[in-house]
Image (cartoon, rainbow, N blue to C red; front, side, top):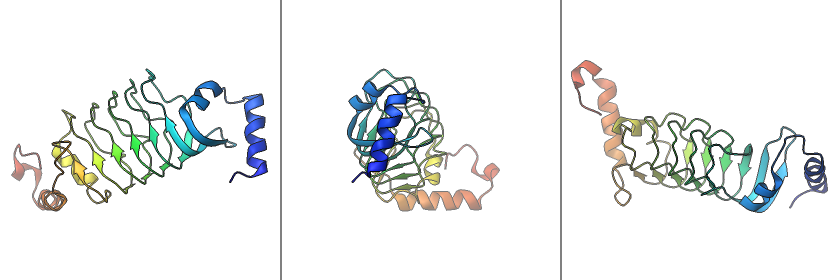
Length: 190
């Protein structure tokens, strides 16, 4: 339940709008209640749906979203403005992302980043309580799974959307690569 102070602060910010927030778009994409923090970031008690809006950037600075957050099916090249924590799933698939920089630190559900132009999983969430979907990314090496295998509670989908990778095999491959020198591996991508 929102405190009277947070309701008052949200109304005050909305009336003065020092952060140049598009409140019509904000209200259109949020299903639930929101609070605008002193730094201009937005907490959402509910869902955020910014999908299919032809966005090239996330138009707000989110901090926490209690349920799910989606910014899929746009033309995003950055996740700047994405929330730090998401209580449910986070979806940024079908964009033009080359990096997961600014992705949430914690995702309480699934993480969807497939169909992007990623070459690395650097900056992926520190915790994903559900599955991690990174299939259909042409230039993403298998060895990038080493970075996320211990951070994902569910399955990892890299080769296929329907067949999960064997997390024990990923860990073994990671350990082998750590023991062998790169020149001993040759052109192998493990």
